[in-house]
Image (cartoon, rainbow, N blue to C red; front, side):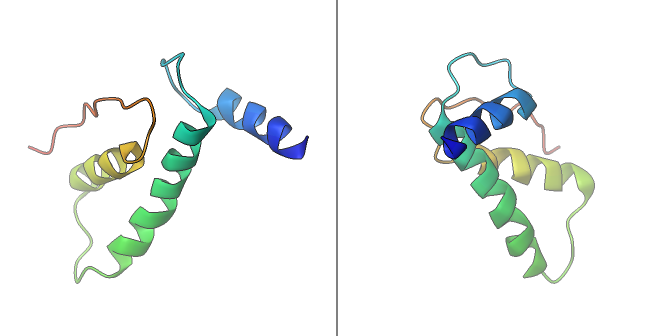
Length: 75
């Protein structure tokens, strides 16, 4: 019951226009938000904000059941 309540709270907090988002999509999204900062710590220099936003968007889309196309430009 706790996981069901938690997933409903996360769905309400997750900014998505996608009505087909699932719990597995949420898990992939939050897993990406955990992995990116840990990976960035290993780099010799922190990337600029635009590239960092593009990396976050790309990594958080990995593993989704209902994939979305990231619309962040790296140029």
